[in-house]
Image 1 (cartoon, rainbow, N blue to C red):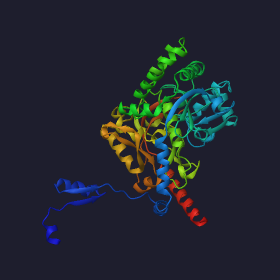
Image 2 (tube, helix red, strand yellow):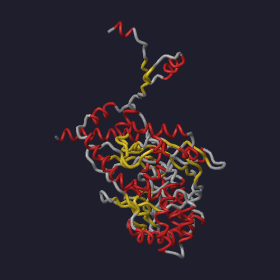
Image 3 (tube, one colour):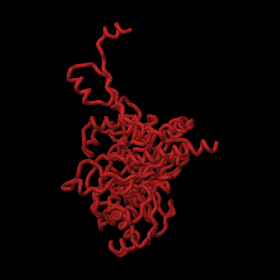
Image 4 (cartoon, helix red, strand yellow):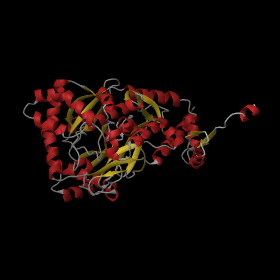
Length: 468
């Protein structure tokens, strides 16, 4: 064997040592690079326990199958007080649980705006005083089968998209999208914000409800699949999806409400992100179908409240695992810069949870003009996510990758073993209440959320072993 080996040109395998690899490349030495990374620090024992759990493989296969087989359909638009049972002074918000005392600027601004919208305060100062005194109740949207972009504040008078899963029977809700700039979800609460919200409650919501009652359900799974073929990634780029949705409902809007059809269609047409909200509800109902599988290490929710970033795991119930929300790195509007940015905020990371958004950026090369980087970065981001996910989505495919399915089913064990964190693209809210949007970019979740979830999974395995 030795003479044969010496008679061939040697090939060097490099593992993680890029300076050595670059030196070999400079000398034209053939090499095979292996992209290996050590596991996250302090996770070795928990990883051994979780990976050895005999339930894990089957549980994860079941969880990801439930998520990818969901068939979300937009079936209606209804008031929050009706579908969520919200009463005056009860508000939902994005992300894990938070109090007024810990709330960031945009979260506080959105809550102030909601107080004014509901007639619970005379002015912003009165609203702040009442919120600080505990005169409003705050609960996460996720605790009520709901998701909300950015601050995600939902109040009783707001109208909600209602999305049902025709496969598993679940339901999820999301508010209507206001557009960009100074809007409530970014923490703005000026007169123009409240006027728009009142119009949405008086006109937009009822018209859409009447149109969907006439047209019947809209297949959001099929629409999302088509939008991916047209250059959307369904988080920060929804232009194709919004256009497709308008095509679906426009005739029914005209038939159901001819006196308001022009203003409603004009509003939707001027808002390329209009589809984001029903799309988020579609992702929520899909992820919820995968909840509650014992032994599963798959993530079923990622969410931020502007202070904390939290995840939930299929096999660990409704428990949140959190860490500090990071400030996105991206492009800023006008004279705004990093000093104006609030830490990451919003439930819209439910799109990444379901295999879209940052996980599908290879399908949307134009997204780099919004969040920064170049086309190769977008492709590399998607490719890297296959390393921490359990499957490829059978319906959500990327033309630029040979129609490969988007990476879906984040596994906390794979995150810990590879050291790779989920890629999230997001809007950036101004840190001062009332500012609105200041930019868009990319952000990484805190590693601690995943390592804590892994430790909890290991504890659950150990307890189960003791019980047996």
